[in-house]
Length: 103
Image 1 (spheres, rainbow, N blue to C red):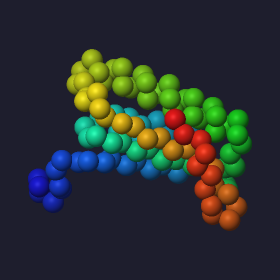
Image 2 (cartoon, rainbow, N blue to C red):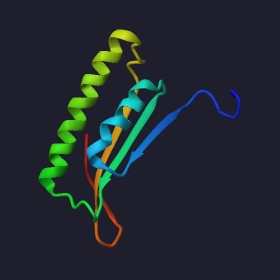
Image 3 (cartoon, helix red, strand yellow):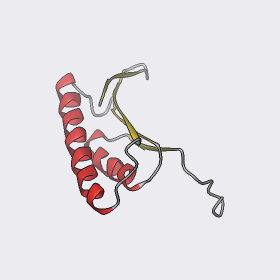
């Protein structure tokens, strides 16, 4: 323990309910050193998503993450066994989530 924080961190989770600003959460995950990093975002009923929008968002998240990892690798490489799980979902009207799209 360091203060009230347990170490090491085994899983880091970043959650963003605005798919348009998800890159900020991805940047935080890239800076953390732990074996598993999870990023979660979704479209809401106030900002309906379409399959095309989610596909564009998936592609953007993938490009952003690859770019961030390339920059960080030059400065502070992370363990090659590190895994990333990125979930992009679309909120259904009855509060179910369709998590069929992922990186």
